[in-house]
Amino acid sequence: MLNIRRDICGYCGACVSVCPEGALELVDAYLTVEDTCSTCGICEKICPLGALEVIKE
Amino acid sequence: MKRRYDMLVVGGGPGGAFAAKTAAEKGLSVCLVEKRPAIGTPVRCAEGIGKELLTDFLPPDPKWICTDIESAELVAPDGFSMLLEPSKAGNEIGYVLDRKVFDRELVWKAAEAGAETYVKARATAPIMRDGAVAGAVIEQHGKRYEIDADIVIAADGIESKFARWAGIDTTVPYRELETCAQYLMTGLDIDSTRTSFYLGNEVAPAGYLWIFPKGDGTANVGIGIGGGKSGNGHRAKDYLDRFIARRFPNGKTIELIIGGVSVCRPLPSTVADNMLIVGDAARISDPITGGGIYNAMYTGRLAGETAVTAIEAGDTSRDALMPYDTTWRASKMGKAIDRNYAIKEFFTKLNDEKLNSIVHSISKINLEHFSTLMLLKEIMKANPSLLLELRHLRSLL
Image (cartoon, rainbow over all chains, first blue to last red; front, side, top):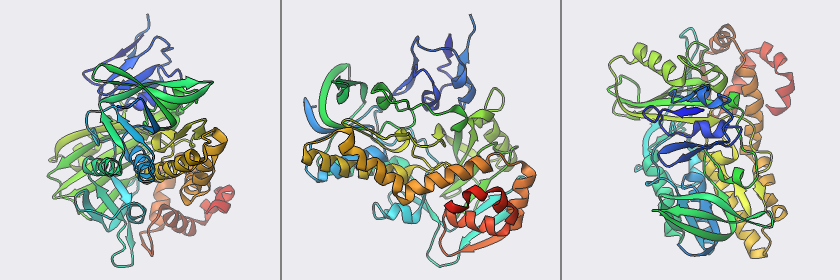
Protein backbone atom coordinates (compact mmCIF):
# COMPACT_ATOMS: atom_id res chain seq x y z
CA MET A 1 0.00 0.00 0.00
CA LEU A 2 0.95 3.65 -0.31
CA ASN A 3 1.34 5.51 2.93
CA ILE A 4 0.90 9.27 2.79
CA ARG A 5 2.76 10.93 5.64
CA ARG A 6 0.47 13.90 6.14
CA ASP A 7 2.88 15.55 8.57
CA ILE A 8 5.47 15.78 5.79
CA CYS A 9 3.30 16.26 2.68
CA GLY A 10 3.22 19.85 1.42
CA TYR A 11 0.24 19.10 -0.87
CA CYS A 12 1.99 20.39 -3.98
CA GLY A 13 0.51 17.84 -6.39
CA ALA A 14 3.78 16.90 -8.12
CA CYS A 15 3.03 13.22 -7.44
CA VAL A 16 -0.42 13.48 -9.02
CA SER A 17 1.12 14.47 -12.36
CA VAL A 18 3.39 11.41 -12.61
CA CYS A 19 1.01 8.74 -11.33
CA PRO A 20 0.52 6.35 -14.27
CA GLU A 21 -2.73 5.03 -12.77
CA GLY A 22 -4.29 8.40 -11.99
CA ALA A 23 -4.71 7.04 -8.47
CA LEU A 24 -3.63 10.16 -6.60
CA GLU A 25 -5.62 13.31 -6.18
CA LEU A 26 -4.96 16.59 -4.47
CA VAL A 27 -8.10 17.75 -2.70
CA ASP A 28 -7.29 21.29 -1.61
CA ALA A 29 -4.91 20.67 1.27
CA TYR A 30 -4.70 16.90 1.38
CA LEU A 31 -3.73 14.08 -0.89
CA THR A 32 -5.87 11.00 -1.51
CA VAL A 33 -4.97 7.64 -3.00
CA GLU A 34 -7.41 5.28 -4.68
CA ASP A 35 -7.17 1.52 -4.72
CA THR A 36 -6.11 1.60 -8.38
CA CYS A 37 -2.63 2.42 -6.98
CA SER A 38 -0.19 -0.21 -8.25
CA THR A 39 2.50 0.72 -5.64
CA CYS A 40 4.94 1.34 -8.49
CA GLY A 41 6.87 3.78 -6.30
CA ILE A 42 7.19 6.61 -8.82
CA CYS A 43 5.49 9.12 -6.54
CA GLU A 44 7.69 8.02 -3.63
CA LYS A 45 10.75 8.75 -5.76
CA ILE A 46 9.83 12.20 -7.01
CA CYS A 47 8.20 13.74 -3.91
CA PRO A 48 10.26 16.88 -3.11
CA LEU A 49 9.81 16.28 0.63
CA GLY A 50 9.66 12.49 0.96
CA ALA A 51 6.06 12.30 2.14
CA LEU A 52 5.13 9.11 0.31
CA GLU A 53 6.22 5.57 1.10
CA VAL A 54 5.31 2.29 -0.50
CA ILE A 55 4.81 -0.34 2.16
CA LYS A 56 5.19 -3.85 0.79
CA GLU A 57 2.72 -6.23 2.38
CA MET B 1 -24.09 28.75 -8.97
CA LYS B 2 -26.36 28.45 -11.97
CA ARG B 3 -27.30 25.19 -13.61
CA ARG B 4 -25.73 26.14 -16.93
CA TYR B 5 -23.03 28.41 -18.36
CA ASP B 6 -21.56 28.94 -21.80
CA MET B 7 -18.13 28.24 -20.38
CA LEU B 8 -16.90 26.56 -17.21
CA VAL B 9 -13.29 27.13 -16.16
CA VAL B 10 -11.68 24.62 -13.82
CA GLY B 11 -8.81 26.33 -11.99
CA GLY B 12 -8.13 29.93 -10.97
CA GLY B 13 -4.46 30.36 -11.91
CA PRO B 14 -3.24 32.70 -14.68
CA GLY B 15 -4.45 30.32 -17.42
CA GLY B 16 -7.97 29.94 -16.06
CA ALA B 17 -8.24 33.62 -15.18
CA PHE B 18 -7.30 34.76 -18.68
CA ALA B 19 -9.65 32.28 -20.33
CA ALA B 20 -12.50 33.48 -18.09
CA LYS B 21 -11.72 37.18 -18.56
CA THR B 22 -11.42 36.90 -22.34
CA ALA B 23 -14.68 34.99 -22.76
CA ALA B 24 -16.62 37.13 -20.26
CA GLU B 25 -15.52 40.33 -22.01
CA LYS B 26 -17.08 38.96 -25.20
CA GLY B 27 -20.34 38.36 -23.44
CA LEU B 28 -20.22 34.64 -22.67
CA SER B 29 -21.64 33.48 -19.36
CA VAL B 30 -18.63 32.15 -17.52
CA CYS B 31 -18.14 30.27 -14.27
CA LEU B 32 -14.67 29.85 -12.79
CA VAL B 33 -14.11 27.36 -9.97
CA GLU B 34 -11.00 27.19 -7.80
CA LYS B 35 -10.61 24.31 -5.37
CA ARG B 36 -8.44 26.28 -2.97
CA PRO B 37 -9.99 28.65 -0.46
CA ALA B 38 -7.89 31.55 -1.77
CA ILE B 39 -6.69 32.54 -5.24
CA GLY B 40 -2.89 32.69 -5.47
CA THR B 41 -2.04 30.51 -2.51
CA PRO B 42 -0.21 28.37 -1.84
CA VAL B 43 2.36 29.79 -4.26
CA ARG B 44 4.10 27.13 -6.29
CA CYS B 45 6.37 29.26 -8.39
CA ALA B 46 9.78 30.96 -8.52
CA GLU B 47 7.84 34.04 -9.70
CA GLY B 48 10.21 35.20 -12.44
CA ILE B 49 8.93 36.40 -15.82
CA GLY B 50 10.47 38.09 -18.85
CA LYS B 51 9.56 41.73 -19.03
CA GLU B 52 8.40 41.72 -22.63
CA LEU B 53 6.38 38.59 -22.06
CA LEU B 54 4.42 40.14 -19.25
CA THR B 55 3.61 43.43 -20.95
CA ASP B 56 1.91 41.45 -23.73
CA PHE B 57 -0.86 40.90 -21.22
CA LEU B 58 -1.16 43.71 -18.76
CA PRO B 59 0.63 46.87 -17.78
CA PRO B 60 3.19 46.33 -15.01
CA ASP B 61 1.84 47.31 -11.62
CA PRO B 62 3.97 47.89 -8.51
CA LYS B 63 1.23 46.10 -6.53
CA TRP B 64 2.47 42.74 -7.77
CA ILE B 65 6.00 43.47 -8.97
CA CYS B 66 8.62 42.87 -6.29
CA THR B 67 11.76 43.68 -8.26
CA ASP B 68 13.07 44.78 -11.66
CA ILE B 69 15.83 42.43 -12.73
CA GLU B 70 18.68 44.01 -14.68
CA SER B 71 21.17 41.19 -14.93
CA ALA B 72 21.53 37.47 -14.44
CA GLU B 73 24.46 35.32 -13.52
CA LEU B 74 25.03 31.76 -14.53
CA VAL B 75 27.27 29.89 -12.09
CA ALA B 76 29.24 26.89 -13.37
CA PRO B 77 29.68 23.72 -11.29
CA ASP B 78 33.21 24.90 -10.35
CA GLY B 79 31.90 28.24 -9.05
CA PHE B 80 32.89 30.35 -12.04
CA SER B 81 30.24 32.94 -12.79
CA MET B 82 29.15 34.37 -16.13
CA LEU B 83 27.26 37.63 -16.20
CA LEU B 84 24.38 38.39 -18.53
CA GLU B 85 23.68 42.05 -18.93
CA PRO B 86 21.41 43.54 -21.56
CA SER B 87 23.27 46.47 -23.07
CA LYS B 88 20.37 48.82 -23.65
CA ALA B 89 19.48 50.96 -20.71
CA GLY B 90 15.99 50.32 -19.51
CA ASN B 91 15.84 46.89 -21.11
CA GLU B 92 15.66 44.91 -17.91
CA ILE B 93 15.68 41.16 -18.10
CA GLY B 94 12.46 40.72 -16.22
CA TYR B 95 10.46 40.95 -13.06
CA VAL B 96 10.08 38.91 -9.95
CA LEU B 97 6.38 38.90 -9.15
CA ASP B 98 4.33 38.50 -6.03
CA ARG B 99 2.11 35.70 -7.28
CA LYS B 100 -0.27 35.92 -4.32
CA VAL B 101 -1.22 39.42 -5.44
CA PHE B 102 -0.76 38.84 -9.16
CA ASP B 103 -3.06 35.81 -9.40
CA ARG B 104 -5.69 37.59 -7.36
CA GLU B 105 -5.52 40.58 -9.67
CA LEU B 106 -6.10 38.37 -12.71
CA VAL B 107 -9.14 36.68 -11.20
CA TRP B 108 -10.46 40.08 -10.13
CA LYS B 109 -10.21 41.20 -13.73
CA ALA B 110 -12.12 38.10 -14.83
CA ALA B 111 -14.78 38.86 -12.22
CA GLU B 112 -14.96 42.51 -13.30
CA ALA B 113 -15.48 41.33 -16.86
CA GLY B 114 -18.53 39.41 -15.65
CA ALA B 115 -17.29 35.93 -14.82
CA GLU B 116 -18.78 34.26 -11.75
CA THR B 117 -16.05 32.98 -9.44
CA TYR B 118 -16.24 30.32 -6.74
CA VAL B 119 -13.52 29.27 -4.32
CA LYS B 120 -13.20 26.09 -2.29
CA ALA B 121 -15.19 24.70 -5.21
CA ARG B 122 -13.74 21.57 -6.74
CA ALA B 123 -14.56 19.80 -9.98
CA THR B 124 -14.87 16.16 -8.96
CA ALA B 125 -15.94 14.65 -12.29
CA PRO B 126 -16.79 15.67 -15.82
CA ILE B 127 -20.38 15.32 -16.98
CA MET B 128 -20.13 13.18 -20.11
CA ARG B 129 -22.79 12.96 -22.83
CA ASP B 130 -22.31 10.77 -25.89
CA GLY B 131 -18.65 10.39 -25.02
CA ALA B 132 -18.04 14.14 -24.87
CA VAL B 133 -17.56 16.57 -21.99
CA ALA B 134 -20.80 18.46 -21.28
CA GLY B 135 -19.99 20.10 -17.95
CA ALA B 136 -18.71 19.13 -14.53
CA VAL B 137 -19.77 18.06 -11.10
CA ILE B 138 -18.70 20.76 -8.65
CA GLU B 139 -18.49 20.23 -4.91
CA GLN B 140 -18.47 23.21 -2.60
CA HIS B 141 -19.09 23.43 1.15
CA GLY B 142 -20.48 19.90 1.23
CA LYS B 143 -22.93 20.49 -1.61
CA ARG B 144 -22.85 18.93 -5.03
CA TYR B 145 -23.75 20.87 -8.17
CA GLU B 146 -24.11 19.56 -11.70
CA ILE B 147 -23.08 22.34 -14.04
CA ASP B 148 -23.64 22.10 -17.77
CA ALA B 149 -21.41 24.09 -20.12
CA ASP B 150 -20.88 24.27 -23.86
CA ILE B 151 -17.14 24.41 -23.25
CA VAL B 152 -15.04 23.41 -20.27
CA ILE B 153 -11.54 24.86 -19.87
CA ALA B 154 -9.22 22.49 -18.02
CA ALA B 155 -6.86 24.90 -16.26
CA ASP B 156 -6.21 22.73 -13.24
CA GLY B 157 -2.44 22.96 -13.23
CA ILE B 158 0.29 20.42 -12.68
CA GLU B 159 -1.99 18.15 -10.63
CA SER B 160 -4.59 18.30 -13.41
CA LYS B 161 -7.16 15.53 -13.30
CA PHE B 162 -10.02 16.94 -15.32
CA ALA B 163 -8.70 16.10 -18.79
CA ARG B 164 -7.65 12.70 -17.50
CA TRP B 165 -11.15 11.95 -16.25
CA ALA B 166 -12.40 12.90 -19.70
CA GLY B 167 -10.17 10.24 -21.25
CA ILE B 168 -6.93 12.05 -22.08
CA ASP B 169 -3.69 10.61 -20.70
CA THR B 170 -1.90 13.51 -19.03
CA THR B 171 0.76 11.51 -17.16
CA VAL B 172 4.12 13.28 -17.02
CA PRO B 173 7.01 10.81 -17.48
CA TYR B 174 8.67 11.03 -14.06
CA ARG B 175 12.12 11.75 -15.49
CA GLU B 176 10.55 14.79 -17.14
CA LEU B 177 9.12 16.19 -13.97
CA GLU B 178 11.31 18.73 -12.22
CA THR B 179 10.77 18.19 -8.54
CA CYS B 180 11.15 21.55 -6.81
CA ALA B 181 11.64 23.07 -3.39
CA GLN B 182 12.03 26.73 -2.55
CA TYR B 183 12.34 28.93 0.50
CA LEU B 184 11.32 32.53 0.65
CA MET B 185 14.26 33.82 2.69
CA THR B 186 15.12 37.09 4.30
CA GLY B 187 18.26 38.62 5.76
CA LEU B 188 20.28 37.82 2.65
CA ASP B 189 23.23 39.84 1.44
CA ILE B 190 22.38 39.88 -2.28
CA ASP B 191 22.04 42.28 -5.20
CA SER B 192 18.32 42.82 -5.59
CA THR B 193 18.59 43.50 -9.33
CA ARG B 194 20.32 40.26 -10.26
CA THR B 195 19.03 36.71 -10.56
CA SER B 196 21.44 33.81 -10.13
CA PHE B 197 21.32 30.37 -11.69
CA TYR B 198 23.55 27.56 -10.43
CA LEU B 199 24.29 24.59 -12.64
CA GLY B 200 25.90 21.23 -11.98
CA ASN B 201 25.27 17.64 -11.10
CA GLU B 202 26.36 18.18 -7.49
CA VAL B 203 24.23 21.31 -7.06
CA ALA B 204 21.08 20.47 -9.04
CA PRO B 205 21.19 17.32 -11.22
CA ALA B 206 19.16 17.65 -14.44
CA GLY B 207 17.89 21.02 -13.27
CA TYR B 208 19.16 24.21 -11.69
CA LEU B 209 19.16 26.18 -8.50
CA TRP B 210 17.96 29.77 -8.48
CA ILE B 211 18.08 32.92 -6.43
CA PHE B 212 15.33 35.35 -7.44
CA PRO B 213 15.51 38.53 -5.33
CA LYS B 214 12.29 40.07 -4.05
CA GLY B 215 13.81 43.22 -2.52
CA ASP B 216 14.99 44.22 0.96
CA GLY B 217 17.32 41.25 1.32
CA THR B 218 14.58 38.73 0.59
CA ALA B 219 14.62 36.20 -2.23
CA ASN B 220 13.12 33.03 -3.57
CA VAL B 221 15.94 30.52 -3.16
CA GLY B 222 14.86 27.36 -4.89
CA ILE B 223 15.81 24.31 -6.84
CA GLY B 224 14.42 21.90 -9.39
CA ILE B 225 16.02 18.54 -10.01
CA GLY B 226 15.11 15.91 -12.58
CA GLY B 227 12.63 13.33 -11.30
CA GLY B 228 15.05 10.58 -12.31
CA LYS B 229 17.65 11.99 -9.90
CA SER B 230 15.35 12.22 -6.91
CA GLY B 231 15.09 9.68 -4.10
CA ASN B 232 15.51 9.12 -0.39
CA GLY B 233 18.29 11.31 1.00
CA HIS B 234 18.75 13.19 -2.27
CA ARG B 235 15.51 15.00 -2.84
CA ALA B 236 15.05 18.60 -4.02
CA LYS B 237 14.84 19.80 -0.42
CA ASP B 238 18.06 17.94 0.53
CA TYR B 239 20.00 19.65 -2.26
CA LEU B 240 18.50 23.02 -1.36
CA ASP B 241 19.29 22.68 2.34
CA ARG B 242 22.90 21.82 1.52
CA PHE B 243 23.26 24.88 -0.69
CA ILE B 244 21.69 27.19 1.87
CA ALA B 245 23.88 25.90 4.70
CA ARG B 246 26.86 26.86 2.59
CA ARG B 247 25.70 30.06 0.90
CA PHE B 248 23.18 31.62 3.32
CA PRO B 249 23.93 30.16 6.77
CA ASN B 250 22.38 33.21 8.46
CA GLY B 251 19.36 33.61 6.21
CA LYS B 252 15.91 33.24 7.74
CA THR B 253 13.22 31.15 6.10
CA ILE B 254 9.73 32.62 6.07
CA GLU B 255 7.99 30.30 3.62
CA LEU B 256 8.43 26.80 2.19
CA ILE B 257 7.26 26.39 -1.38
CA ILE B 258 7.26 23.07 -3.17
CA GLY B 259 5.94 21.74 -6.44
CA GLY B 260 6.48 20.00 -9.72
CA VAL B 261 7.15 21.46 -13.16
CA SER B 262 6.75 19.38 -16.30
CA VAL B 263 9.57 19.58 -18.83
CA CYS B 264 8.08 16.97 -21.16
CA ARG B 265 6.53 17.64 -24.53
CA PRO B 266 3.09 19.26 -24.35
CA LEU B 267 0.06 16.96 -24.58
CA PRO B 268 -0.28 15.55 -28.12
CA SER B 269 -3.71 17.20 -28.31
CA THR B 270 -4.94 20.05 -26.16
CA VAL B 271 -8.51 19.96 -27.46
CA ALA B 272 -11.38 17.51 -27.28
CA ASP B 273 -15.09 17.84 -27.98
CA ASN B 274 -16.27 20.79 -25.84
CA MET B 275 -12.97 21.02 -23.95
CA LEU B 276 -9.77 23.06 -24.13
CA ILE B 277 -6.71 22.36 -21.96
CA VAL B 278 -4.42 25.27 -21.01
CA GLY B 279 -1.17 26.05 -19.20
CA ASP B 280 0.45 23.52 -16.87
CA ALA B 281 -2.52 21.17 -17.28
CA ALA B 282 -1.58 20.90 -20.97
CA ARG B 283 2.10 20.49 -19.98
CA ILE B 284 2.94 23.76 -21.74
CA SER B 285 5.73 25.00 -19.48
CA ASP B 286 9.15 25.81 -20.91
CA PRO B 287 11.39 22.72 -20.88
CA ILE B 288 14.58 24.72 -20.19
CA THR B 289 13.54 27.44 -17.78
CA GLY B 290 10.47 25.74 -16.33
CA GLY B 291 8.70 29.07 -16.80
CA GLY B 292 4.96 28.79 -17.22
CA ILE B 293 3.25 32.07 -16.30
CA TYR B 294 3.36 33.54 -19.80
CA ASN B 295 2.51 30.21 -21.41
CA ALA B 296 -0.53 29.85 -19.18
CA MET B 297 -1.76 33.40 -19.84
CA TYR B 298 -1.17 33.02 -23.58
CA THR B 299 -2.99 29.70 -23.88
CA GLY B 300 -5.70 30.87 -21.49
CA ARG B 301 -6.44 33.94 -23.57
CA LEU B 302 -6.32 31.96 -26.82
CA ALA B 303 -8.64 29.33 -25.35
CA GLY B 304 -11.08 32.07 -24.35
CA GLU B 305 -11.02 33.56 -27.87
CA THR B 306 -11.44 30.14 -29.46
CA ALA B 307 -14.37 29.35 -27.18
CA VAL B 308 -16.12 32.60 -28.14
CA THR B 309 -15.74 31.90 -31.87
CA ALA B 310 -16.89 28.30 -31.50
CA ILE B 311 -19.92 29.14 -29.38
CA GLU B 312 -20.95 31.95 -31.72
CA ALA B 313 -20.73 29.49 -34.63
CA GLY B 314 -22.71 26.90 -32.68
CA ASP B 315 -20.04 24.24 -33.07
CA THR B 316 -17.82 23.28 -30.13
CA SER B 317 -16.61 19.96 -31.49
CA ARG B 318 -12.97 18.97 -31.38
CA ASP B 319 -12.59 20.00 -35.01
CA ALA B 320 -14.09 23.41 -34.36
CA LEU B 321 -11.74 23.94 -31.40
CA MET B 322 -8.66 22.67 -33.24
CA PRO B 323 -7.51 26.19 -34.26
CA TYR B 324 -6.57 26.66 -30.58
CA ASP B 325 -4.18 23.72 -30.74
CA THR B 326 -2.65 24.58 -34.10
CA THR B 327 -2.32 28.30 -33.27
CA TRP B 328 -0.36 27.90 -30.05
CA ARG B 329 1.87 25.23 -31.58
CA ALA B 330 2.71 27.55 -34.50
CA SER B 331 3.23 30.55 -32.21
CA LYS B 332 6.56 31.89 -31.02
CA MET B 333 5.83 30.19 -27.70
CA GLY B 334 5.03 26.84 -29.32
CA LYS B 335 8.19 26.93 -31.39
CA ALA B 336 10.26 27.89 -28.35
CA ILE B 337 8.88 24.87 -26.48
CA ASP B 338 9.86 22.57 -29.37
CA ARG B 339 13.34 23.99 -29.59
CA ASN B 340 13.91 24.16 -25.85
CA TYR B 341 12.74 20.58 -25.43
CA ALA B 342 15.40 19.35 -27.84
CA ILE B 343 18.08 21.49 -26.19
CA LYS B 344 17.02 20.40 -22.71
CA GLU B 345 17.43 16.77 -23.74
CA PHE B 346 21.02 17.57 -24.69
CA PHE B 347 21.97 19.81 -21.75
CA THR B 348 20.61 17.62 -18.98
CA LYS B 349 22.98 14.86 -20.07
CA LEU B 350 26.15 16.98 -19.86
CA ASN B 351 28.71 16.23 -17.15
CA ASP B 352 30.13 18.97 -14.94
CA GLU B 353 33.35 19.21 -16.93
CA LYS B 354 31.43 20.06 -20.05
CA LEU B 355 29.17 22.50 -18.22
CA ASN B 356 32.25 24.23 -16.80
CA SER B 357 33.81 24.64 -20.21
CA ILE B 358 30.59 26.08 -21.63
CA VAL B 359 30.22 28.69 -18.89
CA HIS B 360 33.94 29.52 -18.97
CA SER B 361 33.83 30.08 -22.72
CA ILE B 362 31.87 33.28 -22.13
CA SER B 363 32.54 35.43 -19.10
CA LYS B 364 30.26 38.23 -20.10
CA ILE B 365 27.58 38.65 -22.70
CA ASN B 366 26.07 41.94 -23.60
CA LEU B 367 22.78 41.21 -25.19
CA GLU B 368 20.64 43.66 -27.08
CA HIS B 369 17.60 41.81 -25.86
CA PHE B 370 17.60 39.08 -23.33
CA SER B 371 16.00 35.77 -24.15
CA THR B 372 16.84 32.11 -23.71
CA LEU B 373 17.29 31.88 -27.47
CA MET B 374 19.82 34.74 -27.54
CA LEU B 375 21.74 33.14 -24.71
CA LEU B 376 21.82 29.77 -26.47
CA LYS B 377 23.00 31.39 -29.69
CA GLU B 378 25.89 33.08 -27.86
CA ILE B 379 26.81 29.82 -26.15
CA MET B 380 26.87 28.04 -29.52
CA LYS B 381 29.01 30.78 -31.04
CA ALA B 382 31.59 30.44 -28.31
CA ASN B 383 31.53 26.64 -28.41
CA PRO B 384 31.80 25.51 -32.02
CA SER B 385 32.18 21.90 -30.87
CA LEU B 386 28.68 22.05 -29.39
CA LEU B 387 27.30 22.98 -32.75
CA LEU B 388 28.67 19.74 -34.13
CA GLU B 389 26.99 17.73 -31.40
CA LEU B 390 23.80 19.69 -31.88
CA ARG B 391 23.74 19.39 -35.66
CA HIS B 392 20.19 18.19 -35.61
CA LEU B 393 19.17 21.32 -33.74
CA ARG B 394 20.74 23.78 -36.12
CA SER B 395 17.55 24.35 -38.01
CA LEU B 396 15.84 25.30 -34.77
CA LEU B 397 18.33 27.95 -33.73
